[in-house]
Amino acid sequence: MGFCIKAPGSKALTEPRAAAQITPNQSMAQLSAQSRRKLMALQLLLWHSALWTGQEAIPLVSVTSLPPPLPWPQSFLLKSLEQVRKIQTRNSELLEQLCATYKLCHPEELVLLGHSLGILQAPLSRCSIQALQPTKCLSQLHSGLFLYQGLLQALAGISPEVAPTLDMLQLDVANFATTIWQQMETLGVAPTVQPTQSTLPTFTSAFQRRAGGVLTVSHLQTFLETAHCALNHLV
View 1 (cartoon, rainbow, N blue to C red):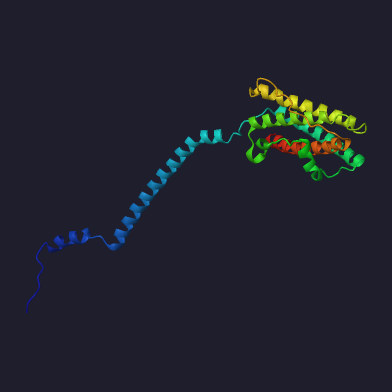
View 2: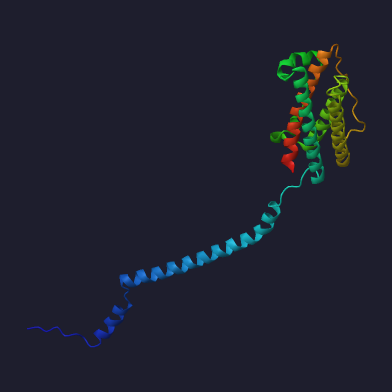
C-alpha cells in the first residue's frame, strides 16, 4: 500500500501562487474603474475646452450682434417720409380732379400719347428694397423729382379748376427735391452743380395738356410709392 506524503513546506510554496492569481471578476472590475477614470478625465478636458472657447467668443458675439449703422440720419428719413406722404395726398387729389372734371380716369389708355408728347417716367431702380443702394438711390430720387418738377411746370394753364392744387403740388415736389439735395451735400455725394432741366413737352391742344397732366401725376404716384417703401424700410 502506498501513501502519498506531502513534502514539508509544500503548502507554503503553493499558497502564494494561488494568492497571486486574478479572477475574471476582479479583472473586469479593474478595467471598469480605469475606464471610469479615463471618461471623467475626458469630460473634464472637454468642459475646460468649451469654457475657454465660450470666453473667447463673447467679444465677437457682442460686436456682431450690433445693428448695422443707418445709411441716412433718422431725422432725414422721418422728414422725407412726411414730405412723401404730403405729396401723395396732393397728387391723389389732382388725379381725382382731372378724372371728375375731364373724364380722364385711366392713365394706361394714354401711354402711347405720352410717348409722343415726351412725358418720361423717372427710374428708381436703385431704391427698390431688393437692390437698395443708398447713395445711388439719393441721386435717382433727386433726378426724378427734378424731372417731375419740370413736367408739372409744363402743365401751367391746364385749367382754373385744378390750378391751385397743381401749384401746391409743384411747391411740395420742389421742397422734397431740396431736402434730398441737402442730404447729398451732407454726405459729400452731390454733383458740383445742380442738374439743368431737360426739354419739356410741348402741348398743342387743351386735351394734350390735360392728358399730359394725368400721365405726369400717375407716373409721379408710382415714383412716390417706391420712394416711400425705400425710406420706410430704412427707418
